[in-house]
Length: 398
Image 1 (cartoon, rainbow, N blue to C red):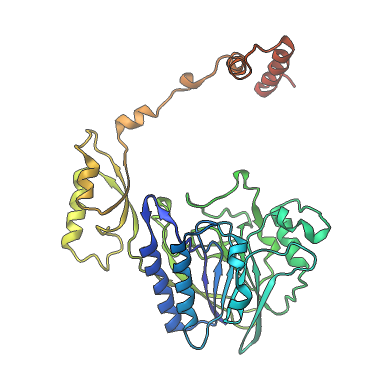
Image 2 (image 1 turned 60 degrees about the horizontal axis):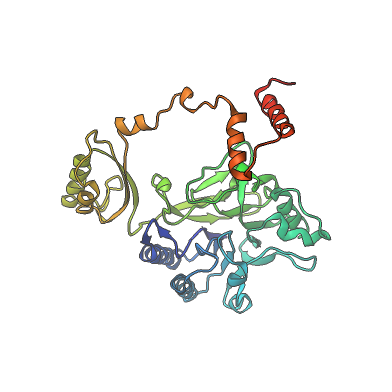
């Protein structure tokens, strides 16, 4: 059983102020070309189809065109889609029953009542059936109706609650498609600036909830990586969606399942974006010279050389501010994301000694804040309570 594992298309996203429609149309066309050549048994899309819960008409049109072109491939390739945290479950579920008859299986929301269950799709190869379970993004509150209003204590418990009631036969081959923040085996996944994660990691799902599946196709994190075990994986995005992703290598994951118990084989096919995202650092003159050199050289096969149409984040290290640096850069780079300065002068501005930031009397400072907010002074009783709190924090009291 061979299938594509995609996730986090984020159709409709902008990179800083640039519209990515052309970039996304280009990379989705490359996925279609791979599908025509390889003809996988299925294509999995693990959530965050759109970048916003209310996508623009342009974004909907682009995804509709992608699905239409996939459905025109013969023999038909089943497409299995779940909603991510950026998607609207209701909008994604629209016409899902009709699309199912055309081999496009969509699951917008997790089961919320005792009568609802995960959408399951069975496909067959020479070793028998493979069962694909579609688990859209969920929060504990979404599934409290599964056990008489009982609220799961954590995201892990919520995922376990949903899966355990399915009565999955793990003597067979099973694949889970899920969009959550998974952790496990003491490994912390690599994250980037464009991902939304809860403060303190309260939305973590431990991989113990899903480890018995033969493969777990994850969405949510933009960098391709395993999570604790080789068969539990994020495939990452097809494109770089933030400057923090500049160093990542994007690829199309092709997953192959053999007989039950055999290791999963994963092949990463290269992708060729319309424009790359790069971080450039150095003196202005050197960066401009590098761009001029790339203009004269053949850089089509040189992945380490920036092209003039790439999205670039520039950090200038000149000690003397150059004249109109952005205007000079715009003459050689057409898609500038940002221009920053990092030199000795700017670093000194960020240096503060401990004495500069020490609050000698926090009670006095809070008193001024209280007076500003409440329009009155604190009473002696309030000052006494607050003083004991500060003493405890400092360790002056047991």
